[in-house]
Image (tube, rainbow, N blue to C red; front, side):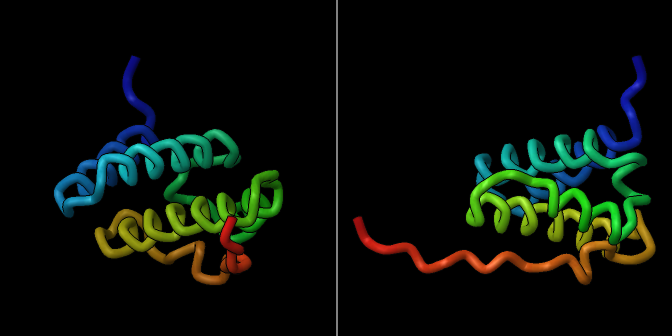
Length: 106
């Protein structure tokens, strides 16, 4: 079975992450977030609209810290995609940034 367009672009992005020296855990988390995002979008990753990404973010039922991490991974992916000519504009440009409250010591 041939790989989907999303699989190909996620692999390319993760290969770029590896070559930039990103930690293996970062690579693994990014891959997981992008695969889950691709499953929740109505279309392909590279044609996602700001409204679709806003809907994705608003439907997540995770902690604020996790939400901030997911949003960061998705933003970095789209910055890479724009810089490498894979999509024309960054659909995450107006995606809300999650402010994580300062944690208290245990």
